[in-house]
Image (cartoon, rainbow, N blue to C red; front, side):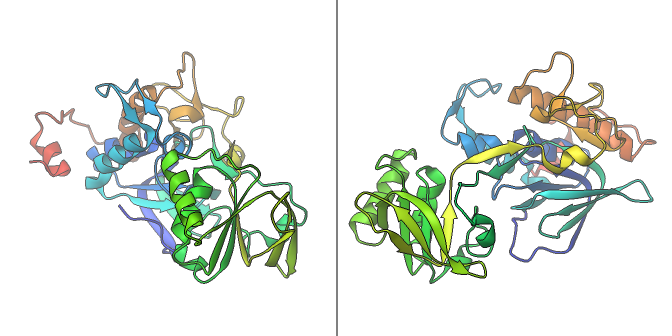
Length: 348
């Protein structure tokens, strides 16, 4: 699988572009791969797993068939491993912003970072929509966004030798405090209270760095930003015991994520209460060549369960193959007995 890079190639060509790398999107790589269809996964997050990996990576899931208990992160990891033999292109940290239907009835997607993906079919597997960062109510925030204030870390090297202010008390804030400390000139973690929402392991690692004098911990809140032309020089702080100002040339606010349907709502799809209606025989939308699986779709009897998403993916994959190759007949094969499928999976 190909991870996102700082300088992605300008255009990716593939059979199927899958928007969303949650469980349904990841399993679609496997099912489509069995039918010899090449996939490209695109997700706004910086890693695969979608809601499972982002919101409850360590919480157990009990209703995956054959797995009495598995964590969200482990499920995502195993789905990535399952699809690995088919070598999908995986694009992280990109949000699909535009969709064009080309003259030959294929599609061209453009991301917010300028990457283009050309595909014969689009599969929307975006869960409840794209995860987008919650922006704190700080005056003049927009002036500094993506210049010296960032809501995600796409490359650790971009923060080398910088004075970083990390704001938040969850796993993202704690994990990036630990990860950036070795490369940054200084790291200050700011949280509005002394208790943290992160996992005990992350909290312990952060406190060990604080005790060693490698990270500064301040209890308080950001009240204002200082700097020019989008470049931070310091942040004003309201704190009982801390400084009134913290010098910094980069700030990372981690206030959680919100779900938005995003640009998908502008693609001519029938949107019903922020969901996409589909034909349950094919899971195609009202737009030929655009399919939807998982929590993003809606139909009579819909259940928002991961296992139902897997079922939808299996039916969708066969419908996609028929859409791309209408004259080819799919020979039904089973992975337990088919030499051809075992060869594709590398277990022959």
